[in-house]
Length: 394
Ligand SMILES: *Cc1c(COP(=O)(O)O)cnc(C)c1O
Image (cartoon, rainbow, N blue to C red; front, side, top):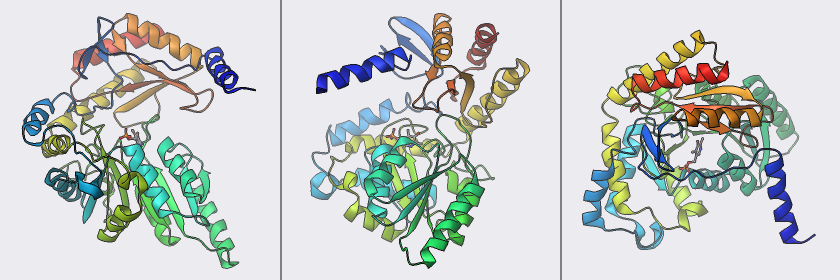
């Protein structure tokens, strides 16, 4: 069997199963309405939950005057600037940690952090629906990976207990528990407080990927959108490894890990996707700092929450197949991949863009429409979506 044959066969198989993915090429900036192949579509696909992807352009243009385009090198060579430094300090303050470390993307932050922390002989426990980058990080670390059933903390406890029993028989190794906060394809929320207490009981380290929660989840007093730690009222010690991304609610690009002084020092020394890659453009870091300041105002988060409540209420009245999500990610479960694709196509003909998410991104038989709401949508746009969904799903 030749390489060509293998590649050809894999592609053919994808197509036959209706699982082939295709890129859609935008002709406009990201926003609640985008242009696709010349047509204007109301966009319910993006992770730009607060509408900041379209808002940071001016800040970026201004920052480019000072910093020009590239960082020129990795952070440890000569690519680290005061713009990066200020953003890291602001992210640490915002999330309530002693320090933060910028990565070029969330994928790299997760890969680099897990692979730097865990080693052969360690034990990594992950939610079955964790993001691909978390699972890949575990592979890369050479530690033993076991996945517990989605949000099933009894299963997790069982695995932790089994492991402790093994440990007392001399099988050493540290334990790392890793979970998404808000799950990217389901929109539901991990019980991070429970994960934290399980981790403490079993002397395990807890790492939370808050890609969809950073900027959105907030403390009960709704002050600043400080993320999953603030939302669950945990201290930095109770949630020692926190990952946030800048490409979703913050509307830009990049990611960070927040934690203790020593954790950050350790990652600077040992996280290979941090060390061996070009630093983010410093102008981008400065633009992200401007967007971070916008999070101090609650209006965008409040607008988003109102849209979520409204959408769920109306969708329930229409008996649409809602999933148990309180977040901006509101999937409708369809099941069959081909049907999901067909519905997505029908919506597009009505001027609405909703992506069909199919295996292997989600488990077999659970293809879905992944609707994402943002603060920049209008009530009227959401009404149009609901009316079209009622029509095509009847
Ligand atoms: C998007 C996402 C990532 C990856 O972040 P990027 O900055 O886009 O690379 C990581 N984890 C989760 C849960 C995500 O949804």
